[in-house]
Length: 207
Image (tube, one colour):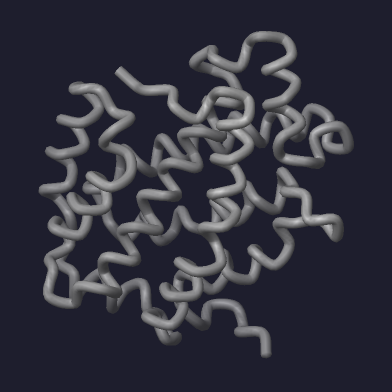
C-alpha cells in the first residue's frame, strides 16, 4: 500500500524512488538516480548545521549532473553516458566535470549509508560518534587537511540523537526504513564506483 503524502518516515520517498533507478535492462538511469539522491536531502536537513557542508556539496553535485541531463535527456538517459563522454574527451578529471560530480555525490551517499548503519548498530552512540565513525570509514581518506578539518568541526554540531530519530520517524517505522535504505541503496553506489574505477576515476582526492 502506498503511504499517503506526509505519512511515513523521511526515508519513504527515496525508497519509493529506488524502484525506478534501473531500466528494464538493468542500466542505471540518470534522472531516477538523481531524484533518489534529492529525496535524501530532507533527511540531511534534519541534522541542521552539522550537515550544512555535506548538503551543499550533495546539492551542487546533483544540480551539475541534472543540468547536463536536461541539456539532452534522451542522450543522457543513462547515468554513465555523460561521464563516458568526458572520459573520451579527456575532460573527466576537471573539477567541474560530471565525473567529479558523480564521484563525490556517490561518496557522500556512502557516508550517509554508513552513518545510518552506525545508528542502527550502536543504539548507545551519540550522533557525533556515529558521524565521526562513518566519516572515517568513507570520506576521510579522500579529503585533504582542509576538507577534513572543516568536517570535523561541523560534526561537533551534530544534533541530539533521540530528537533526530523522532524528527525523521514521522509516522512510520524509522528503524525498518533505515534498514531498507541501507540494503537497497548501496548496490547502486557500488555500481557507480565500479564504473568510475573502470575509467580510472574512483580514487580522485580533494584538497
